[in-house]
Amino acid sequence: MGGVEEELLPIGQFARLGRLSVKQLRHYDELGLLRPAYVDAETGYRYYRASQARTALSIGLLRSLDVPLAVVGEVLAGSAGVLEGVRAELEAELARRRRTLATLERVMAQGLPAAPVRVVAEPARRALLVRERAAGAEDVGRATSAAIARLLRTQAARVTPVRLIGLFPVDVGEVVEVSAALLLAGGAAGGAGWEDGEGAQVRVLPGGLFARATHVGPYDQISLTAHAVLAWCAERRHVVRGPLREVYVSDPAVTPPEELVTHLMVCLEEEP
Image (cartoon, rainbow, N blue to C red):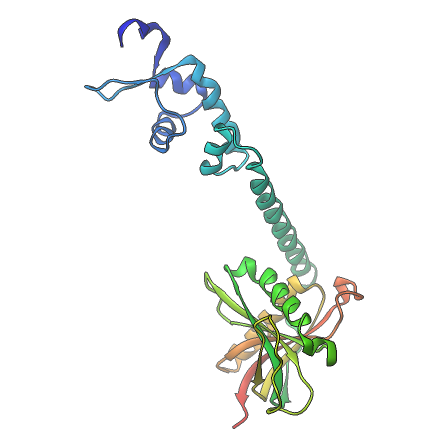
């Protein structure tokens, strides 16, 4: 240590000065965020300079703002604009929390969902279908919007009435594949497919008997009506096969969110 011993502080004293724990300091050393000024080769003891306290306090401040450690390192390195991504993630989380709160308030006001369910017969329908992958349940809304946007850019959407259906797995995992379908005129099957650059394919949506309930309200509260349909099926020992279907009746461009009408459908028995 030579002649600089008075300038160095043992890790415990420096931890109090920088308002971090000894465990945190060791971790930040391993990550390269805050290296000790000196490490005794024989004992492994870490020593710091008082001037490093500003860095320690800055790390503590950024972590209190939910800035990930990887981004903390970039901020300390002077990289410009790296906090914009953190801000965007926090805004997205805040929006999700607000949607969750609105759904909770609906349950508080109306009780657990018990929308009327009836059994309807649906014919097989020819549709143009696109698929999108979602990174878990919280990303389903984005993936659905992206799939619908791709459909609306196809040639089919310009020459046929826009009748849209969303298809979702009943069980949501870490990676979710969702689909959006544009119903096509001209019968249940056959006919030429549409050529476009959106990855759309002509498919036949199976017909059969479906349990159906109607949801009125924002799309992000559809899970309440889906719960009612699945509970109805479970009480009657119906095995849910195939995806949940959301049949979009309203045009969200001209309909207030609280007035949007969507039919929720679960297949009970497919046509032979």
